[in-house]
Length: 258
Image 1 (cartoon, one colour):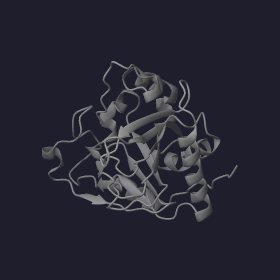
Image 2 (image 1 turned 120 degrees about the horizontal axis):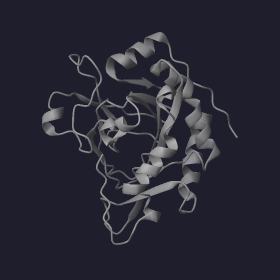
Image 3 (image 1 turned 60 degrees about the vertical axis):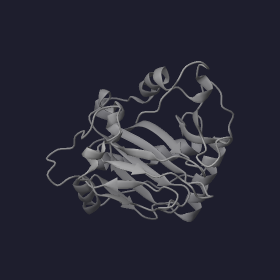
């Protein structure tokens, strides 16, 4: 099993992250490591969907309503050694950004296959995260080349007048047009091995994928260890309202909100 070098951030990078709410690290991983991450994403997507295992979500293709697509896989670290190593490799650098020891909160891969839908503007803490801790760091790893055409991550810098990081919108609701009117979203195309750190209050979004190539992005999220280890509790709570597809009741509607 390939071991990953941990990323060490400079003081300048840490300052830039806190100034704008995110930080781009091109070529954080070598080509050989990137290929391993691509292999791991392939492996997790081929595993059988079983109750009590990793969580798989599906969506209907925007290009062909008869086609079913993998939309997202979550809760992977207990069931895939490589992805567990990847998640753990960011604990030191997220600790640098948090100012103390970090702990994993959640992990996922957003697949966005050809015909996959995008994500409306939102802050991740709108998804009820403040019930677990006050502040989180997300790490995005580019698996496939992410372009403007296939729906790369788009981020808005933190408003200069914002004295502290906080929610700009309501919980469980994407940011409205009024709330995003003064935000300047910028697309950040990435290549395999590129990494983006962004905090739980950084507004972000992405467009749909109408190309013929997948746009898979890996995300792991961390909080301060002093605020608790919530990984298991988070998934216990999420299972109640938005379980993986294999665990869903046939006659019940499930709505993805943020």
